Amino acid sequence: MSSAFYQTTGKIKGSVRDLKDMTEVLRGYTLGTEDAYFTNLEFTDGAEGEICFTADGPYGKFDRLNDVDVFREMAKSAPMSWFEAAIEGEDDWTQSELHCCLKDGVLKIETTVNNSEDDDQAYKEYVLGKIPYAKFIDMYGIEADSLAEEDYEDFINDLIIDCCENETSPIDVEYDAFSERLHDYGGEMTLDEEAYEVVREQAVKLEITPEYIFREENDHGVTESFMFDAITGQYIK
Image (tube, rainbow, N blue to C red):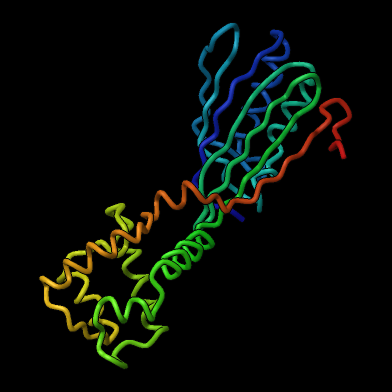
C-alpha cells in the first residue's frame, strides 16, 4: 500500500489510432477504478507529432512502481507505436523511479529503489571512519570517561542532522553549537574557543564530504531491468 507522492511524465508517438488508444488507457487510470491511479493528467503537443503528458501519482495500492500496469497496458494497446515515460518520487524513507520505453513491440523497463535509511547509515559510517572515537577524544581534548563510544556515535549522528540543512561538513561547526551538542551527551571538552578553532581547521583538512555530495557520489540504489513483449503480453526472460 502506498500513499506517497510521485510525478509521472512521458511522451507518445504513433498513428492517429495509436495515439487515441494510448491516451484512452492513460485516462482510464484517472477514474479510480484501478488499484493504482493518477490525478491531474494533462496532455500537450510536443515536437514532430508527439503528445506529451504529465500526471500526479500513481496513488493507491501497489508495493513497487512496476506493479502499476499502466505502461504495459499502453504498450499492448498500440504495440508498434513508440513512447517514453517516467515515474519519480518518494515514499517515507524510500526514493523510487521507473523509466520505460516502447520501441518495435518491446517495452523496456528500468526501476531504481533507493532507501535513504541505508544512505544515512553509510554516511555515518563514512564520518566515523574519518574521525574515529579515539582520534576524536584526542583531537578535541575530551575529558576521560565523559563520553562513551556509543554516545559519541549518537553525537556524530546529531551533528550530521544539524549540518545537513546547511550542506556543510558535520564537524565544521561553531564552538558554542559544538560544545552544547557535546554536553547533551555528557562530553566535556577542555579546549577553549581559540584552541577549538585551531582544531576545527585541522578537522576540516580531513576533507569530510558534506552529506549531499556523499549521496550524489555514492548511489546505494537497487536497479532492476525488465523487457515486456507488447504483442504477446508477456515478459521476455
